[in-house]
Image (cartoon, rainbow, N blue to C red):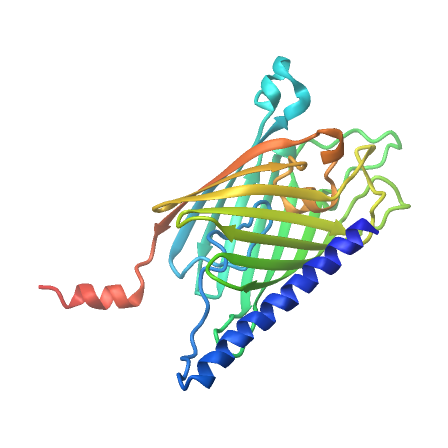
Length: 309
């Protein structure tokens, strides 16, 4: 009941803020000022909100080198240096092919997992007309850990290692400070702990960003599972993923610091297979570091260089 109430409050807030922006445009029309139709940019500062994808794409010819780090549980105490002795790392390389198409690859130390990402921007929010930005994100992940010995004597199949994620990302930038996003998601597991669990987990994610200064913003992200809520992972109960963080922008770098109950760094893991709980104090500190590089110079800059002599 509490979770349903939170979702109702979220959608109500989105509706109120939408009307507020529409009223501001109406005021401009009433004063005789004709607003110019323009795309809304920088809904989020990075291609990820915290763990999950944002609607942002890299520009054409831009490469993003990203390091993601999650430590162990804070409640492990001084003997494990409050989780700092138990860490997992992921390295991502994302590349913008066009302004609406982005691809990426990554390697996650946890489960020795490799993944690929495809993100397509379908609609772009405009200051007049289109109220939201909509993107599609699809991911494939492969666990490369050694094949286990099955007690039944069956052969471990390669397809048992595969997982697929499909998401629709719907975001709106309400002001220079506030952006919100919804993420209807489906994760397909080729292998689950028991036949009583579905191979498909449906979830609704919600995330947001609130800018508190020119270079610092507060972020949040929550994935509410609509199915497989009692699913086990390696015999352990699973929980909804919830994360809060801070974005710090410094030139070409974006630092993201967060607290989360999920140590996994792939959609397969944090959406449907989070085995830690905030209520039990099983909280992880982590960070993301992003550095972008221009691999292919945009055409307008090439033309400018050609005019020099």
